[in-house]
Length: 76
Image 1 (cartoon, one colour):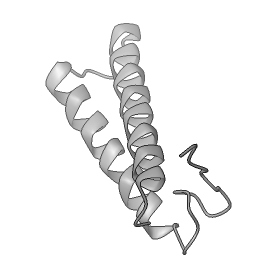
Image 2 (cartoon, helix red, strand yellow):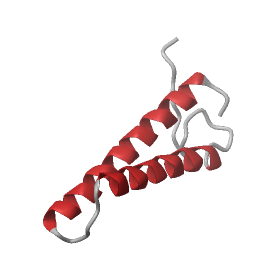
Image 3 (cartoon, one colour):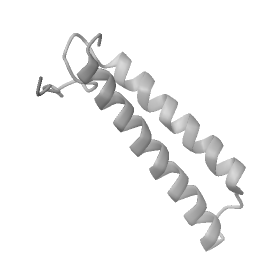
Image 4 (cartoon, one colour):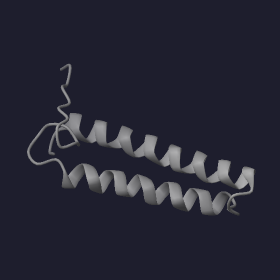
């Protein structure tokens, strides 16, 4: 958890999760399934990204990666 590779992988996962939540929220709004404006979508995306970071920390368990079975290897 205290490596650069861990935080790089965790940051990437948080950005990816936040983007997925934003796209899903705005897509469902476009389809008329829910009513959400950009503020709502960004709030959900931020919450999802935060949860991705917290999940990475909680499941680090001494491994190099942010997942339970994941190992991130640094090139340098």
